[in-house]
Length: 367
Image (cartoon, rainbow, N blue to C red; front, side, top):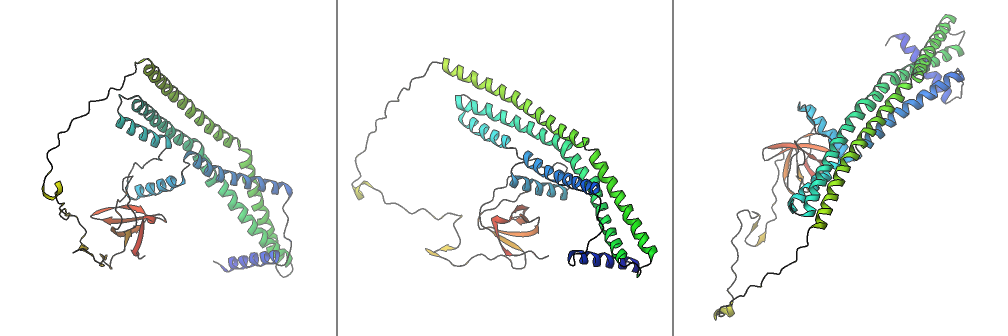
């Protein structure tokens, strides 16, 4: 930084201290400018909060959102084009219904109805996925673009204006010690920054019809989703009514008990009261090597100290591609920490990632 730049930073810092601590008054901005600044600030906060709440509306489970974000990050690191989607509640319910409906059998009333309802729920999940895509493309992405470009530009202009205002006020109060030409230049730069910031805020607020159009797109996407959902549920309702009517018209089957079997009991064995002595089963091939001769060994397997590793506290069943499954007590070699919730490691030649709260670190990773 040049000497002039250092002096300017000193002037601004001195003026800020005198205003914050000493109670000195700086140059006041007009009420119209303050009103523009207030509305632009509210618009900025509204955009940020609406984007966040819309994402929560589309994907309400915070744990699933965090996991999906981690999986998407891993997909990018590994160069995978297709990343997993958000697990819609309708889809999870549908899979559960179909599973148990098929276990019961399509020929049963309840089993067949569960399969029909489950397939319908999975169709609803697909429609919900379409809603997610539409809202992201037509509502969230445009708002994010507005914030990243126009609102950040306004914030930059306002920050620059505040710096030039402090510089001007410092020089104005020391007029006589600082050349008049330098004070005049500081005033001109202050007015220049004020005009640029004012124009950018004015343009943002005057073109707010674009945000109304984006809200309209959100509502249209929701309407389309609900229309399709109603149509799909109407079809399911008709199927279930048909099943009810068919079951009511079908004659009831009477339960016919089966004849009880007759057992011929042989003469009791004279030896040992008719009971054969029980024989202890042979030891399992997979028995614990630390249980020997009826005593519990106090020795525990120790992981190699030269490698970062952790011990599994619970069983972990992988649900998504790339996750590493393990059993309680397994020693897992640590290779990387993905984020504050997930590790990446190796076990029995398999590599994958797993949650931190399922393990206890034995030898920590070194950075």
